[in-house]
Length: 250
Image (cartoon, rainbow, N blue to C red):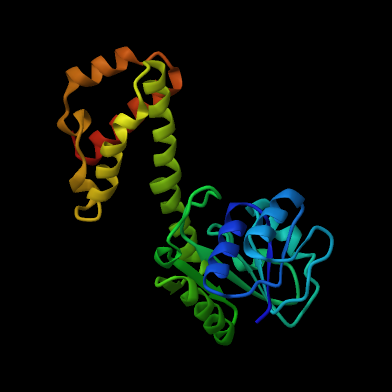
């Protein structure tokens, strides 16, 4: 099966790397960013183009959500599968006469961070059973965790991912603002962060909650609020504590 990847960002990079590591050839990587495409090409021995989309049996669209529909119109071949990698869009966002699909890896991707691809859940949706089997077989060559999922389920998977990854990472960034402002090395907090994330492998998140809000320690909450001078940090602090209190009915 000839595969073409459309895109040159984080997801495209890691798809190319995952396929390369599992000895699955990619015929081409296509996009607009020549420098990023050249990096993917050089690392994983994949031809690249900024002008013409090559012939393929499977096109994997790994671009930002706003660009998926537009780039899908550039694929004119009919007898092929076109799959986007978005968690938040249905397959009918793809506009063409080809067979439509979704090939969604549930992970946060950064080019500079290596990943164990075998642990990444892949969610596959296709228009027919044969294509479903084809893409699930492809995903199984990369990962041990492959599931079918229609858009109705996938959009909630993506929403949960935003809460559990993007929001949490934003809190890390806000926490670092505070530690940097006080010249406290953020490295001090890494064991705490690692324990927090590892603990939920054994405990339900609700049961793992600690801190002054779950104890309803009003004195500590007031002291903390008096220390925060950044209005956005203060709003986050109050919103998070209010949510914790409500969950535990304090």
